[in-house]
Image (cartoon, rainbow, N blue to C red):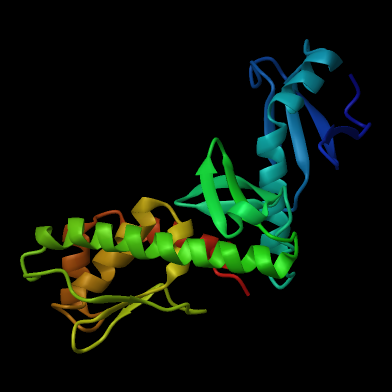
Length: 246
């Protein structure tokens, strides 16, 4: 096989191009697929791999490739409004799901999650309506999940007698805050992040109940409760453009 020719395959209505990169046997024992930060799809193959094997490999991972490309497009152009049409890649608790829009008057406003899909039932397939239903569902799930994690984490902190009151508010620059009176304000978009990211934000804000600043005492508390918080914060910050809609 030549590496000079760009290949492609079809996934639904999408045509996805990819290039093949031959690797010496000592470096490539199997076919490996990469989606680069700029959206290029590169397939590393050992010399003995056939064209049929390469095509089979990309088709087997077509869903993953498509979701990664969607994430790249949204990261590169975060200002682009989301169409909220069927096939879009959505995040929930750190996992990617494929949006499916179902026009059903009897179930309008209903959202179902499962088997790698978020299914939204609406009365009409109008993007604004789909967006409104999704936003309502995300906010409701955020209230439930964040409250449950707060109740689970707070008892382990000796300075917290009872879980503090919590409210949700969409914020463009912050994941959460803690008022001088001890009320937590959390960004409902956190529900799209992984549980360890959610726990990091909650523990961060709970530490502010003891140290309402970012000085040495605060960092000692945070280090003691979550030694890997810096890695998790970096991961969460890298997701920010995708998790917080513009």
